Amino acid sequence: MYPEDDLLPLSALQHLAFCERQWGLIHLEQQWNENRLTAEGRLLHENADSETTEIRDGVRTCRGLRVRSLKYGIAGRADVVEFGPDGPRPVEYKRGKPKKDDIDEVQLCAQALCLEEMLGVSIPEGSLFYGEPRRRTPVIFDQTLRQRVEILIRRLHELTRAALTPHPVYAPKCRSCSLLEVCGPKATGGKSAKQYLKTALREVLDGGGVRGVE
Image (cartoon, rainbow, N blue to C red; front, side, top):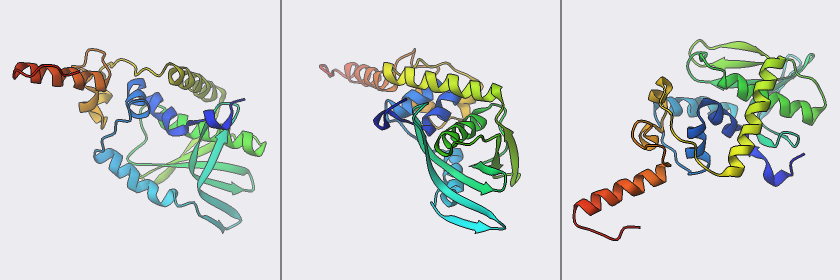
């Protein structure tokens, strides 16, 4: 069991699932840039993050519900949790279309693990609501997905303890990352963003006859 002070954000888990280096840049080096994709996602979440509750047709809907797991050492907020006759069901709002990878499913399943621990229930499935098709995609929390999430959570804690930004590895998905220029996956040679910028600045100043930059 993790103490409250050691709980890591659920958002970090999704960043890690997308790219370990992106996780390091955001959560260790505090780097952030917004592009069209992140802006659209932020706007989509504004209503879901309102921390309101309503009851309609026998279903209680809680928005922006805070969740946490002491077993896994994670905490965050669920966009929407619906409490109906079949029990709680997390619903996560996403921009665009369903993705080819599983990072959205990972985030949703992690929310379910938190809710299961908090409420003492079993949650077999949840939903992802995508902005472009504007319909729900069901997600089954089977053993394969649960194991995938547990492995990522362990990796998240491992990397957090090490406090080192992973080296860049260029992939096609880099083109959609808002941190592409900060990361420089083709140019940094494995250095952190801070190290790369520091070295680049030194080279510019040295070339202009200025010395002594540390």
